[in-house]
Amino acid sequence: MAKERSERRDRGDRKEAEKVDSEFIDKLVAINRVAKVVKGGKRFGFAALVVVGDQKGRVGFGHGKAREVPEAVRKATEGAKRALIRVPLREGRTLHHDVDGRWGAGKVTLRTAPPGTGIIAGGPMRAVFESVGMHDVVAKSKGSSNPYNMVRATFDALKKQTSPRSVANRRGKKVSEVLRRSGDAAAIAD
Image (cartoon, rainbow, N blue to C red):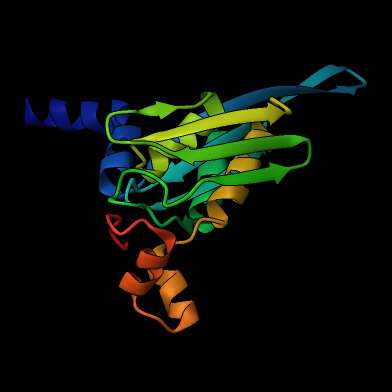
């Protein structure tokens, strides 16, 4: 009985065990099937776009190409884990300030939101926000709806995000002085 259970765990739950073992969650954003025309016909390949995050402020994305979908997803996940960025979150749930991002023809606007708003965003951006651990955000995508451009534009915006603590360190002041000047004394420095 125990042997049967362990075999079942080895066969069916490899991916789930991998997700539990590592601190990261991964979200498959897009799969694209491409064809190469060769002498004997068409040779198909797959490209995958994956977003990986720890839901505590770290997030990354990667893309992988292979002849089969699982291999493409694995390559994309490995690439995403190598390209993690840290995003400062206010109270662990939203952004510190509104920000715009751009990549190619993809443009996004990210806005802070009060508690209980939830994630108001389209598909590829929603995957990024869920992976980073954001609970309240309003996002708008303008321009290209290509998932690659939307994800890269979202990452461009998140890289511009600064916390009151980093601004205070850069200016050589205390966090309370920075917050007092901006008029947002209720914000917590994360």
